[in-house]
Figure 1 (spheres, rainbow, N blue to C red):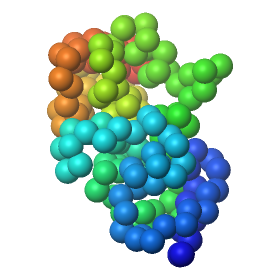
Figure 2: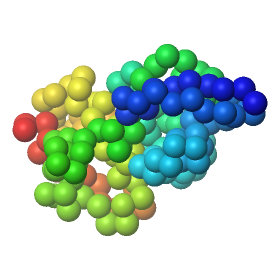
Figure 3: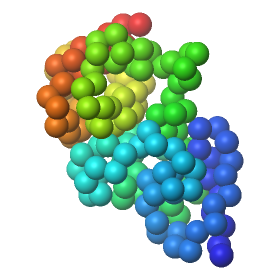
Figure 4: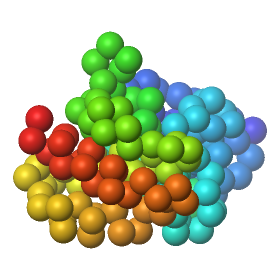
Length: 153
């Protein structure tokens, strides 16, 4: 069986996989047992599967494993630790920005990539950056407040 090598959350993994076009999401969840990225739509529409690939927010449900190459992948689990959470993770907790929690992976990962490029956004900027991340529960107002809070920390 062919082996693919990838770096996820700072660790190198050697994955035996039959089809290198397998979406990265399945490798992360099924082979590496990381459950931050979620399967939502399978069409890169909802954002639940978002990870960072070399710092860029990427929809892992349509990103083939073979395209990762030597890039560095970061999932929600690698963004911060329980002892030292990422400022976004802290602000999402402080703003109680999760109801069901299904979209939170995508919201945080998209926001982290966005804030790395725009550390002092307006509320309008945040809403635009998250426009393609879907939330069924309606916690968008709290999510926007959490991103704004993290932008000033």
